[in-house]
Length: 618
Image 1 (cartoon, rainbow, N blue to C red):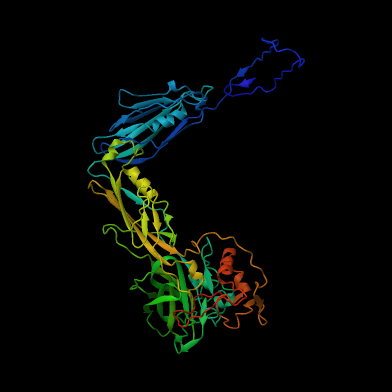
Image 2 (tube, rainbow, N blue to C red; image 1 turned 180 degrees about the vertical axis):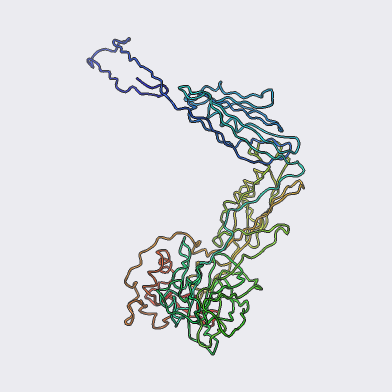
């Protein structure tokens, strides 16, 4: 016994020969009949479903294979569907070809048909799978500008056990735009538009007063591979978006309430070169960014002993920076703990991925401190289209190596879905221009082997789409970082380049679009920041070539280099500080700072306040 509509397998029959020596006979000598009883299986009646894209835009005269529709029917296995498409203000064309022979499970292809009814609607009768293909082939067009509504109705013949005809409906709104007022083509690049702070540091041992940095021994934080920068430990608290909770009426720095909590002073130093002038080798903060930016200001939350004058320096490495001037705030007799100050660098036009501030003057003659210090920045501007505001898209590329810029697309809102076969699109060719400030670009399959500073091509939508999909970029970066550059920043950005894209109609019709891509050039030997590195467990004891300090077991000092330069990069580290970092950050430190024992690694301290304080890890 089997249920109706359920395929069953007979797998219990056996045939045995009475003797293997019997001769082969021409006719069967035994037979058996199996009687199969078929019982109807009750199937719940499920209505069909159709859902379509709500709004489309076409130009007059264009025929669009519009049906981006989803069709389903939970009980259509034993029957077929009937779809009716109607439009009172536009014309419809039925599918020009019928689907090929369906699979074994479907109804014969002869049962699939489409026709135009007397009222101009199109009716399609087909099984579910064929219905989906046929709906994609219906075309709609209008010879005059108009807004039309297309109605769909879909009905089935009930469930296999009989449940009555059921129906579903949907609609699409289409705006037919005059052919003399086409919608412009659209360029899209799905890349981020906001740069991020990925590094901040103060000089090792630069805080003599009670503060979060001194209590935690964390003088540097940076974003490990594939991670966000820590804003809840050590010097990272400078970037915390959470404001410190300060008791009302507080007029002086408060004692540390924990091991670097968000309500504690983050920086606090008492070493001054002269009254009101902090030691510039200690009183500085360095920020690093994942893309070139222009810093326009520094926003601070300060104590009652704040900085009142700072100088800004910008560059692509902490040892190669230029001054962008000083910024001051008005002096006053008394400052409240928790005051907000803003230091403006609005006249700065120099981009870079490293920015340092040096405290040149403090309100107090012998002490300065603060809770927060957050840089304000923007991307370098480039005017491509004066009539439109353009936002740069951010990508990274390894220097001196050709790379694909995957994801850049050209879309045409009037294009429909049949961008190759529709003859109306042949009269609407596009023109694409790609140019680069310094490097070379290529459109791959269209202009293979011809990288250039600027490339222009013309073609229909699909041709332009294929060309931009194979867009490549080759940096033209030949200079090298200074030999004394901070090791951490060699993982950062060397320079930046910009790629401009412009698409328009090549037949002179109005309508165009522009896109700007800012490319950050990364060192070729280290690869892009953000690649996930395999973490190596950091041992609780000191690393090879390092030994515990006799006065401080938490301090691991290099057995050869520490005496020569206690503050050199990699010459010492705090075990408690290292435990605060993630495995990938520890792995980065191991690769960049771990000094060998043969004394071949050279270390160098900066000789000016511009070069010092490059973020050596404690």
